Image (cartoon, rainbow, N blue to C red):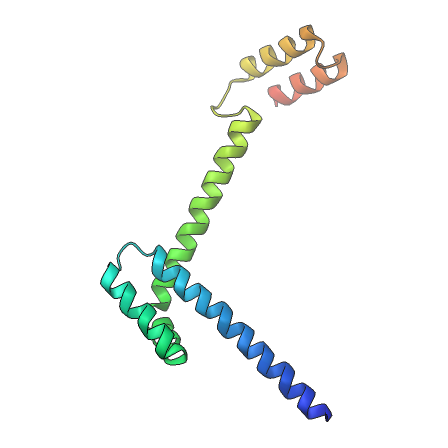
Length: 128
């Protein structure tokens, strides 16, 4: 086995893996798109099975912009859900006033959950 055989094998492996990733993206986009009907999805899948390289190429050319836009929309929706969840878990579902934050800190201090320096830190943070 020569050096160029190894280089060729690495190149072919890279292209094959890139193609498989693109194929999964196309299938995922196809089934996530609510604008495409069931029959059209079946035709695309049928074409992907029998003419995979040509079908992927045609799909990316014909629906590439929409594919990117749907990907951005999904990412934005996922980010919003994550932010909402973090706010909910952190107890910041609404915009509380500094007075409410200080009252919550005082309740924690009175319950013994935080120390005096922690209470002062929360109080100063609320007033900023």
